[in-house]
Image 1 (spheres, helix red, strand yellow):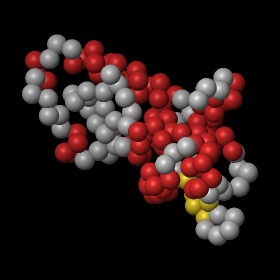
Image 2 (cartoon, helix red, strand yellow; image 1 turned 135 degrees about the vertical axis):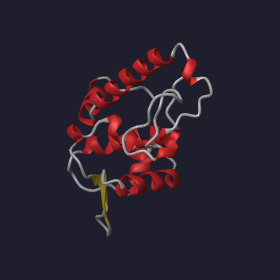
Image 3 (tube, rainbow, N blue to C red; image 1 turned 180 degrees about the horizontal axis):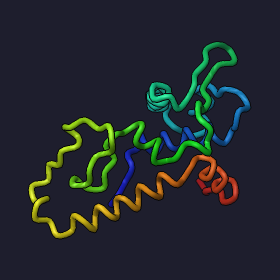
Length: 151
């Protein structure tokens, strides 16, 4: 089963919510946590990481909060995942993304040299990456607006 970590799932949800607001005004972490139902402590860490990689801006004060630092049509889900977790791989033998440390880039698979399914799994991984890289947050938000998910 392919599964995103809870942290990455929450990050996608938080960025989607910020993207849906457009450039209205910064949103406080508390309001974002309430709107998304992300636990505040986890959200605080996610927002700190999103700020560190330049995907959100933060401002202090009474009217401060968080907003996207990039346009939703310029940010893909794949780019967000790589920015927060540089080693998103389907299986061990899939090469790490560019910029990953050499420790992450090396495969620890003991049968990689003789594995008959390595090439097909790499193709599956590449297709998943293409889908994630092709899905921008403005597309994600527009799909949510036209077909909202039941909670």
